[in-house]
Length: 375
Ligand code: GMT
Image (cartoon, rainbow, N blue to C red; front, side):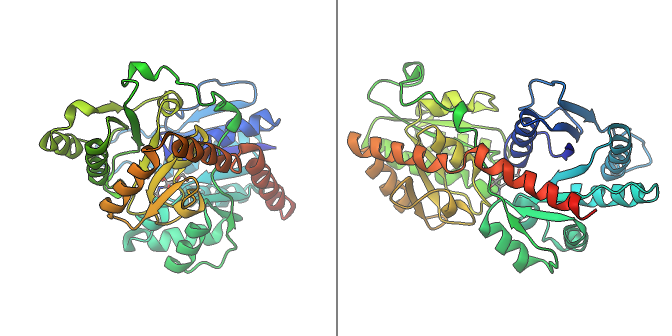
């Protein structure tokens, strides 16, 4: 198939899922066209089967807001016609599903029919999309899509609760390429980051308020009182400075490394002992899955889709949002016994294997086929 993929090309979340999906589909013989405003960060190699088409939005002083969805829908029309794209798969409803619908309408005028598959990722539903300013258009675009998928059962339920949805929603979970994370439980040059006896705790995110960054610092503060430990904070975002100030106030700055954005997540996870994800809400928690496939247990909140990934007492522990004391207790429990930690690590890896990319991508292929057969 010739598939157009529309996504946010940035670090983390929906952009990573869309990019990894496109790369895997290309390996399975499909022709993939990424259509977005920048080359996706994890898209290193363009090949015969992988193309990238940039959406440009010319600056014009009259516009207070530059009309990205207009530029995107025009680009989609042009690319569908030029490359004979058969299916458009848009990741994140806002504004991608809306722009794709407009493109579909314009193409119909020329007797070209392209089905739209919309994948909901979470923040487009729980944090942004349900805002009254967007809700009408988001509901409309979801209902007008030829197929809709959600990355967890929890997100499907949230969507049905928050919007008036007439369409079916298929749950297609996020995934991971297990084969890429085959370094086993070696020390992965951890000596560069910490002393032999120090436990390494990691958090990776976009440092937005929803991630509850201060809870991470507080949990780590409690851990390091009980055992030698280091905290790796990976990513950039608005809460980073607050976290740095809190570390300073608690006198633990020397034990905390702020990495900024990194393309070497797998290397950092390789020497990590425990991952923290205390988010306010999380439709899936791809970061937790990436940790688990590297054999890293997870201490998380029990919100949204996280319980579908992190298994209580098996791959880690889950607590109510904001329950720093319980999270700290659980973290110390996992870390304080070598054999126990090894078991949690093995369980985390085993559970993550269920989300292998090779099990999930055929589900998307079946959905594309289904929409095409209805044309
Ligand atoms: O908050 C983020 O990490 C970014 C955000 C996004 O929209 O890209 O992530 C969402 O999509 C990811 C991929 O499907 C999910 O794993 C995250 O749980 C989800 N974030 C939230 O629901 C807060």
